[in-house]
Length: 118
Length: 114
Image 1 (tube, each protein chain N blue to C red):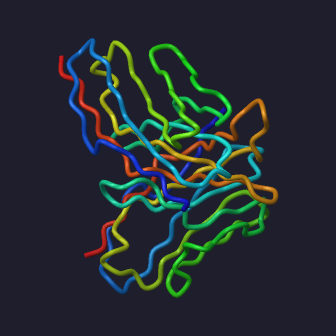
Image 2 (cartoon, rainbow over the protein chains, first blue to last red):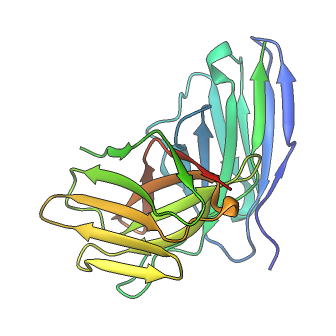
């Protein structure tokens, strides 16, 4: 099956500009996640969708970040205006649903978008 | 309470040796403990996962050892190979309502010397 697709792969912008990232999850996966991975750190969850509803956005800086998942499939993450500290790799992941006693609910990650804010 | 602490930050192992990465957690509500492997320019990929009621899980050269009472778990890579050079993240999964989320450790950059 095709993996999680993300675009663009790289983006360079100046501070105070806006930027948008796109994600297409694995077909049939109900849950979609956006993570921020700062260089040298583990991924940090920004927002989680179950179908087209938001399940968790507690760590999303809502004054500048927004995300939507249209029709429960593709998703976009937007930053407006960008700050220097937003330089990071933005990862999108998807999964089928909940873990069970016999199997872990694996998250499948895309290759990420590397954002550089100058 | 939802943190996962990982050590060491970096590790150099000779080819054929054993690589060991350690993690600790606080929240007893976590229901799975996965390990992810990440190569440069790629997203993380699941390596192996364990439930907290299992003390050890082995898949090929990769073994998770889990100590529930100490709230610690570790990844052992036997017969380490240059192709294992990557960044490894331990994580903890938390189920809630109709979804689950994972909290990642800070990562260990592993280098296997030929």
